[in-house]
Image 1 (cartoon, rainbow, N blue to C red):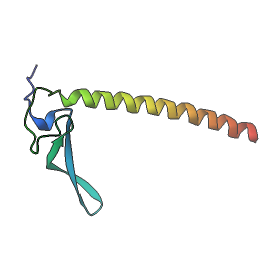
Image 2: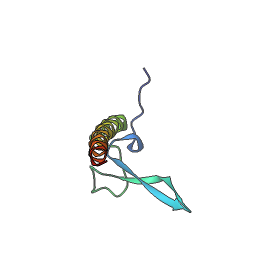
Image 3: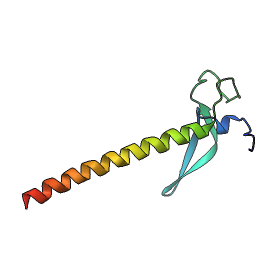
Image 4: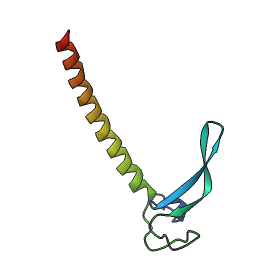
Length: 84
């Protein structure tokens, strides 16, 4: 297994800045630490956690939301079918 290099950029608490160009947003190489708000420039600290954890949590959240939406759509379809 490959060892993950710890840096602010791959920490779950790091929030990247984005810039808008025409109709798209692009990730910049700057950002801030959501956990360590006192520091002006992100510095690796003892609160570092892998950003992969955050990605997994987001995927699970999206999955739950999609299942919920599917159930609601099924209910709406039944209501519309009954009204015909």
